Image 1: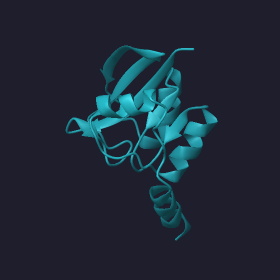
Image 2 (image 1 turned 60 degrees about the vertical axis):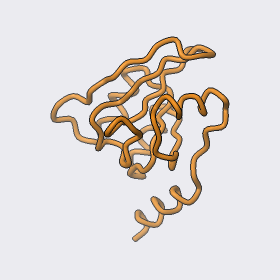
Image 3 (image 1 turned 90 degrees about the vertical axis):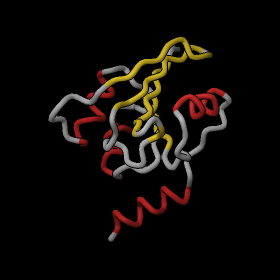
Image 4 (image 1 turned 180 degrees about the vertical axis):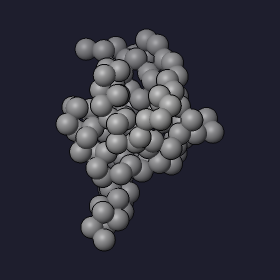
Length: 119
């Protein structure tokens, strides 16, 4: 199964906030990286519309640092896997870790996001 992994990028690194990025770097993976390209979010699109748009683009996974909990639920409804709290790094380095099966969400960041929502 071919996977399409999207990484929001700002200043050539993982963006601190999902939706607040210059573009997404999309990696196509079939055991190894078979291709990659940049995609721009459509002008005027609000963050809450991004999960549906990414789903239409065939994105299977999103790697992010911080993300609004409402967006997490929208991505889950589109059956898009999400890694949250991933260290801010170059997309190619993050994909290497992903391919090794060692990419994990950070529980500390997940709790921080959850606490912000509960307030």
